[in-house]
Length: 421
Image (tube, rainbow, N blue to C red):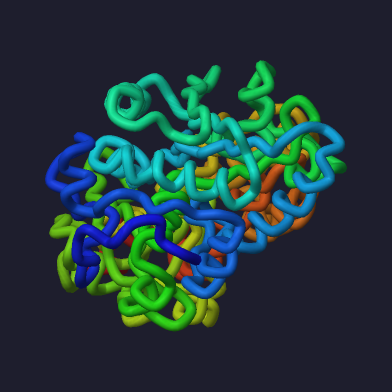
């Protein structure tokens, strides 16, 4: 990778990188990060060395995505590739994309320019909700008045903001003028997306990371964080019973879970009060308080059967019934499906009903066994990964809260009968 002009600012230090700018304007952005250097296809190798991965939930390496789209684009059988920046943030417990777009929209737009140059795209779309679009509109207007970008960037307001609106196939559908719902695809988007063109879909945080690597390089990117989670990441911490309490932190990769909870200063995260944490969002994995020493990266969470996902930590305190919370989440997730395949139409409502019966303490046979049975039936069979997340969440609840499950099967609740402090 070569720079088209000298670096004009010093690289950010510590764990304040994505949110280093004092404001969202172009002047603040360039004063903090300097001008974006010219990049070409060689940036893919630099991003690979930096270890930039997807921050929308899957954690897939960005360089591998770019390589696949660029290779398909070179054939030019269906037109130049297109870039879709995912700013949907349909996950109810996440606020990181909203904070990033509001605080550093130019960093996201720079990232779009970087990946477009890497794959040979001439146009790009930032897909988001009306609620999050305004700072991006202002940023695009500033750029047009200053130095027009080498790639045409437009905003696509999503037709709905449901839980599944940010799924890659749903975004591609929305950009193509469709209903914006997940599709059971046979051909990968990297090969054929909207209008038959090779398509890159990437979360806005991932793109912002790419913009930093383009400026300061892979070695700088790896100067903080852990080997498997280099650099920084945005993390949303909230009380699982109230998503409006959400706090967004920028932290070094691999930071211990307990450290992140303490930094949030939430009441539910006070030492001694945290009973469990839902990792990765509502369709994530419950971890007990014993896991709070684990690092928030792939290696640290793997022994607990979890993954960082979209960077969400939802905290459960010791005064809230975990079975009741799990039942409410299962019901909400069942109602948030696209309703396009059997696992979502039939399986998720059944899971929600059974967990609801368990929460109510109405004995009705082997409820826990029925939850596991139905979860196994929906797992891996949906048009998208939504039913997989629900199955993972409820199974982990049965494991982590097994004493509570037993109490509810007996028609009682540990919290109501002094079984827990």
